[in-house]
Image 1 (cartoon, rainbow, N blue to C red):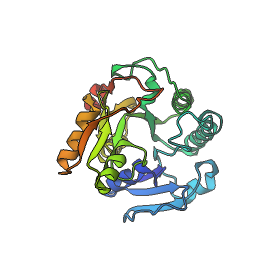
Image 2 (cartoon, rainbow, N blue to C red; image 1 turned 90 degrees about the vertical axis):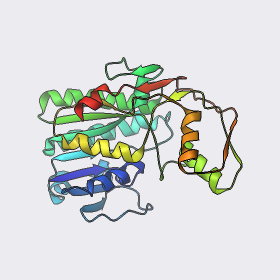
Image 3 (spheres, one colour; image 1 turned 30 degrees about the vertical axis):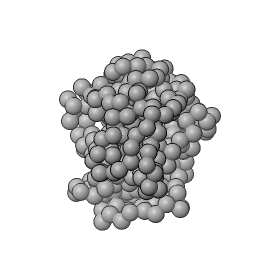
Length: 276
């Protein structure tokens, strides 16, 4: 079995490759970053390739894989850049169309909880979508295109709507790297307001779920990738400190929630639990 993975050198991608290395599959990992140090896995072949430049010849060269885990997306974490709607979205549409026409049979694509926009409370897959930033708008448009593409072509798809994640290798501006940096710099305190409720999973757990879903080889559609458990950011950070036996203390401080983020929201994991 061959599995094609895009965005393989990214934060989630490297953890997905690690999970795939534990099972009997051949992995074709494509990435466009020349600077990132890639991890070695015995069943993974890396290719430096932009998804915008993939043609039938390359697809056949890599063995015509029938399964795709599609994580690639450019210009993150600048979520409100017009790059997402004006440049990235057409690239993504063109890539998926070509891959389906080449013979792809099973696709998992990473979505985002930002597709729910200003929805609050427990969010399920049937919730109305109201994306408030260009990244989420582009993702919703891509999902709509995928559904239309499905009508005229025979393939299975899973839209893995990701909630919040943490783990090593994450963008330095994220909460987990900020806390680790403060610990490494031997700071005595870490300032955070932290009253808002969020839904977090370690990226390794997210990668395990992604691999389990794609190996189901079934029509799953949209599914929340989440814990289903709301947790105050403050309590989450305290658990990280306790689990790692760090000595740093949390102090109350102001941390803006962000223009596109409601105060409290988390994922409904009913469908995910049923599928798994």
